[in-house]
Each structure stands twice: as structure tokens, then as C-alpha cells.
Length: 120
Length: 120
DNA sequence: ACCGAGTATTCCCCTCTGGATATATACGCG
DNA sequence: CGCGTATATATCCAGAGGGGAATACTCGGT
Image 1: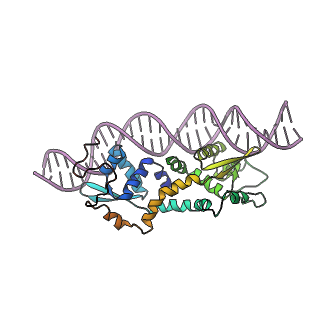
Image 2: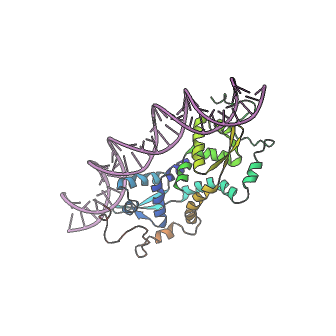
Image 3: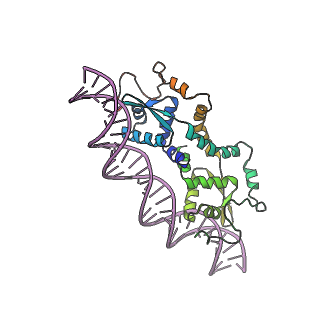
């Protein structure tokens, strides 16, 4: 899943996806649309393919690429709990209350009286 | 918006966000939870702060960080049209039909009868 | 005022990655 | 079967970015 975010971090790759989202396209189309060299586009497509974000279909010499949405569900899933934050179910005030010392949510291995020598 | 994706590409930064999503925390907590050096965490927090993904509250020497969800809406918005793809409204078959030559959706500057000399 | 806790900043190293150029490969056509 | 088209791969380069160590800054306590 981490891989998906790293792949999407690249602007040109997102542009490629945005183009392929409309319709499947050959590499040449993408090269013309992006304004970068053909090898660069091919390299991006390779990365996208290995991340499962696109798939290829061969048509003579041309390779027609299309989007695969499945990996994006992982992004959607990661986003989900944050959506709940801004959807009013849990606003800033409530989150602030959750951090009061009497409750002590404590996700990490944290003892309150010592520090900074266990992980060194 | 591109900045948000680049910031989220870093695994430790996503971990930080996941921790802060539960409750606001001081830097020391994050250092212990992540297992990287304190300067590294501070640097990530700086990046997150400049991207608007977290905000700080000073409490004596400690800095309490919390999540700001607003930039994540941009990610959510980018994801939106893709969600429609996998939500059945538009599946692979339909998208394939959208690429038939008679319709010619054509997002880029593309004439159907000539190629590969306009952008060279 | 000094000290220690907590955090930010600086500097350096090193890896990773995107881009371009050059080359290889696959395919259709005459 | 040689040629042009379409795409992939190889190689090199430069810049960006993450990590750590050392250091600076800030604040509260005594």
C-alpha cells in the first residue's frame, strides 16, 4: 500500500492516470500530452504497471494503457478515518478532549516517568 | 495540491498522521513511536506543517501537534472520479466503449490522421 | 542566573529517482 | 526481408530528500 502513495507522488504519473481515466490510450498520446520524452513516459508506465495502477493491451506495435482502480481503494481506505474527522462526526474540539491526561490514549510504548533511553 | 501527495508519499509521515489522528501528541511521543531520531521527526513535522497537514500548539517546552484534515480533502477530491469507476457507475467495459474511434473523446491536442511530428 | 528537558535547525552523507540520449526490440507493410 | 513506426530498455547525470550527529533555541524550575 505504501507503494501506491509513492507512485502517486509523481505529478506526471497522476497526469497519466487522469488521462487514462477518461479512455485507454497508446503511449504516443501520453507523450504528446505530457511534453516529456517517450522513454520517460515508458518508465512512468512501467512504475504504474508494477503498482497495478494501469494495465496494458497490445494492439500491433501500439500498447494501449488503461487504469486499474483496485490499488486506489487502498488510498481510499487510508483516507477513510480522516474523512470521519471532517465529516462532523469528530471535530477539533472532540479530538482535543480525547487527549486529556486523565484518559491517556497512549498508542506507543510510553511510560510516563522515563524517556529517551529505551530507543537509543 | 501536488504538494500534499508528495508529503504523504513518505511512510513515516503517514505514520505520524495516523498517530496524531487519534489524539494530539508532543514530539517525544512520535519519536518513541517511530523509532527514528528526534531531528528526523522534527523535520517531518516541519514538512507536514508547511503542507498544512498538522498544526502546533505550544505547551511550555513541549509542542503539541494535531492533524489538520483540510488538505486531505484535496486528495479526496482527486480520488473522487476514480471512485466512480469502481462504484459500478462506470466499469471497464463502459470505459472501453468510451475509447471507440467514432466517439473520439480526445483530451489532448490530437488529430487522428497525423502524428509524431507536431511535438518533436 | 543556571540547568535540564523538549524541540528546532544546521550540516553532511548517501541513496533514490526523474529526465535525456542512445540503443534494442516488436510489428506491419511494401 | 528491409524499412518505418511504436515502444521498451540501458546508461548516465543531476537534483531532491531522508537520516543522523552536533548544535542552537526556549522554557520552567530551583
